[in-house]
Image (cartoon, rainbow, N blue to C red; front, side, top):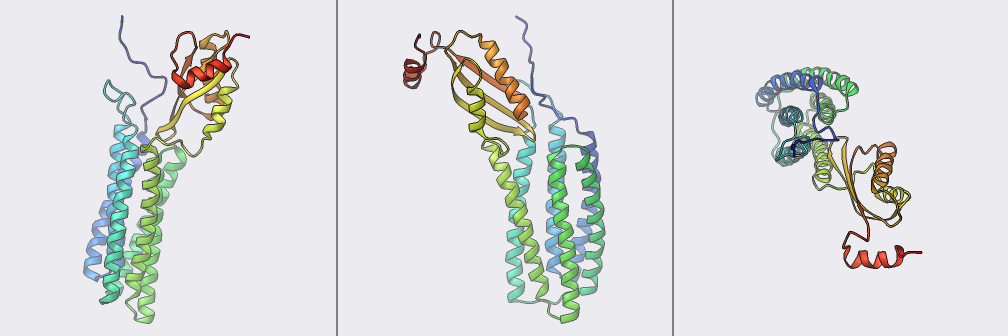
Length: 314
């Protein structure tokens, strides 16, 4: 027998445009991160340092996204039969954890600065924040264009990162103006803690979404009861059980199900009808349906009770 491996579902992503966009964004982000860290240290501005910490997380996020982009192009093998698409989810989870840790650090330092206020070099802080605003606008435009061209979770997550950076830059400029007109340096740690809150919210959202995928929960866009009912309406199907639906990676879903067939129907006709419903109505392209018949299966206590009441000859 000839041994070969065939996949109905494409477990590989071709995303040259996304990779190019991520590389350009990473280089620009890395350069400005260095500038902002130096500026934050020289100006003694916690708001700048907190924003630079967010920029460091952006560098990490973009690096992970690039790695995920590369891994997604690798073919499945005998060990990783689903391919490497899920690395995208692992990268998102790690990125979310990094964002949460950074935001907690910003909160702690912000509290310390409120207790022990420190002077801030306002002109330098304002200059770097303004440059940062321009850089973040450019990066947001680049990522937004790429996001519109192709469906890619890495690009979308990076886009939201830089929208957050955009808000951070605006916050730092506002902090500089408030310090200039009021002389109250407490605005610096307050603004930084607001930025930290934005970062934490984004990180928590990423962690939750990644966690749900890694736990193989049913995607929010699907109603499992509706799917079960539609499968149950297929001619010849008497019961549906062991129904599972999960996300492999972005827009890649898999479904498995066992169905009892008690009538004199061809199993392949039942499977074909179910697959057609799943594909056309729900967009699920990868499904594995096992048909079960009382003549060839030992269904255990549940199956025997069900068959005794539903599959007796009329």
